[in-house]
Image 1 (cartoon, rainbow, N blue to C red):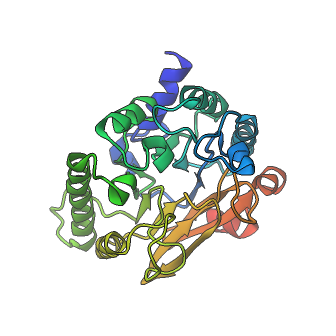
Image 2: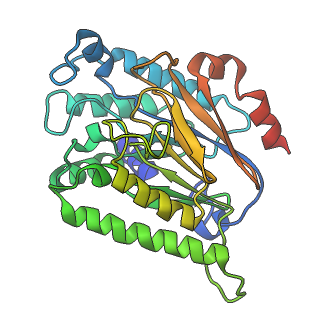
Image 3: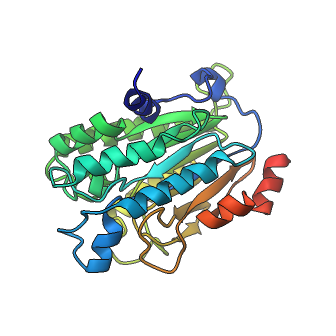
Length: 321
């Protein structure tokens, strides 16, 4: 099996650490994972030069930052159960120059990830196009894996969504409908298992339900105005209602290239800054997420902090409990 094929299989894999899906549906104690976002190879130079539409012809900086991320994550103890990259893997839009080279070099940079830390990929607007088409979605799936899917890890149900289908599916309405149908089934099943007291229920109750998508529901408040960096109000409110009814604990996203988010009615909206280009004052970094029986606790770590000091002390204590 080639290295490219191995990475592709890890991108689409549904179970981790050699365990069966049934085994992963069982809670076995606290664990952690890494949430990263926006390596976006090619954006840093384009942003500096003010040519984000036509630039992006160099990406050595982002490759180095990705390699630093991999090295730091590999050294963490306890070892993360997985690492999820929440979209905008590369900067070049589908069908534009540099796309193939950026995807190739990102895969090369990620090859060093320890095989015991599976990689999970989430599609972003630059991966699919701001208005995705069946062709761009197919291209993404061929390169990185399914654009939406679910997986279990340590008793926790994780849902990976294609947020671009929420943002603008005008060129692929059938794909939007397919994800909507699938998502409704996933949430309904999880909600039924969570509320069922019948011993005949075949679906286990998730300890937590987590959602991963590129575009945040909101940046600060569920009532904020529509923006390039959030989902439209009508879509946002509908998703929030559905997630809350199903008992979703947290939604993790990127896209903003800054840390943001909030907590409302028990649902945590987590917006993490980028591995790559920063649009605010945050350092290049990733988020370490500790999952316990009662809570999902997370802290953003700069790459320097992660490399030199490892996991935040508070999170380490939670994982040892």
